Image (cartoon, rainbow, N blue to C red):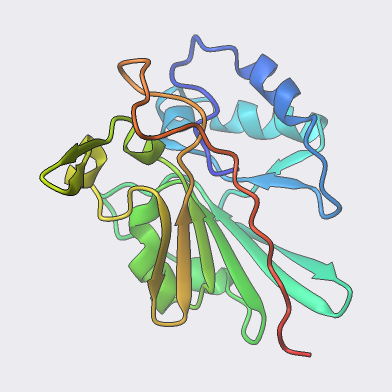
Length: 192
């Protein structure tokens, strides 16, 4: 999960966490926090309550995951704000010669993540643009004004980014041309 479980501090965070707790994965359920958890000042509460439900939010932390002979270094960071340099001190969490995967709510970190050794960055934040309109043969959405990484896959050198459109909305409770999304990404070890 890449953050924004809620929109405001009045949203039913506990109910959301109970729903998310229904997810199952052999390596556990992992996530990072978004700007709405930060604005609502519920980061510590969310992290602690989620842990009671066997969900782990990585807040500038890394965890090694092993699948047979394959290893992933899973790293999560809290929402990265434009006011500060992106991914400060994250290089201390990168493991050489391992597939490094970053969970970051903000997709704008992608160029920095690629430089710092992440093979894959998973992000959210944009709601897929929320309202996408075809204009003169191009797609127009408000998120394009804020970021070049609105939805879907992006590549930079040997690094990839996937921006999930998520399930919710912000502001107007409408989605046009940005259907809600739960993404399944299958990672395959091609080294053998």
